[in-house]
Length: 318
Image 1: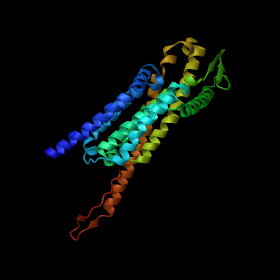
Image 2 (image 1 turned 45 degrees about the horizontal axis):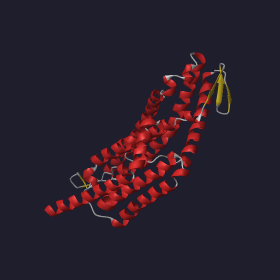
Image 3 (image 1 turned 135 degrees about the vertical axis):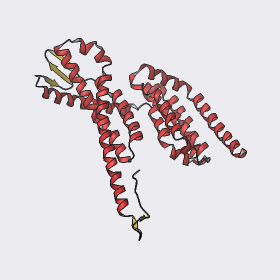
Image 4 (image 1 turned 90 degrees about the vertical axis):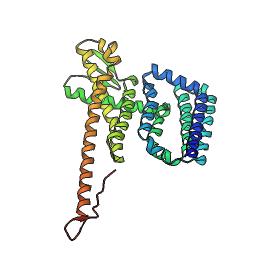
């Protein structure tokens, strides 16, 4: 028993040392990322990611750490990749935007941490804790090569939704490109109006909701993907609301108002209502499939001579 405890102390100690070394190596970019997350809306979710990850690790700690073994073959290459990404980021720092520089740096930091975990606790523990560990990927800023086309996609989607809603209202308007003209004012659906921040937040929320309330993998995927059309619809609705308020109440609604600067919050709540509805439908579908599987299991159970069921089979859909 003492040998086992000593082994755990050594294993935990090695992991802590590796984490401290990683924090020391990536201290400057981590500090820069935290500063951005506190001052720029696009990065505001990042500071919460480690907290959520630790929470899920804590919930599954007995399952994750029940069967431990060192895994040098998988862990050492990942740990070695960490410094490579660090020096790559430093080398390309002057030619990259701040976003892309931090993207490379955080990819290296997450790789270092995952490699440290695998080395100290093994592949089996990593598989058991895959969700909270891989959830740390959301700490990595989205590279511009992916972010810019995605923003354009959201921008165009919001534009088309707003166009459709304007038609439903019956209000006379004219659209040219990304600009709506109505009641003597012009409203542009700019990149800043794409709703990228709320879309990321809704996507992460859908992943967490799927993990907590949905069992089947394909239903979790459906829930996560539904976040994007919901986000686009929500953002198009916001564009129309602000435009109508500016046109028929006060122009400051579109230029200098709380609803324009921070009004995404009430519209985000609307998006959550839609997401909750999708979640409810998926859970209802899942319960039906489980009930059906249980009924089929009962029907296939063998019956003994005295009329009782023997070898009853119940298939529970995980």
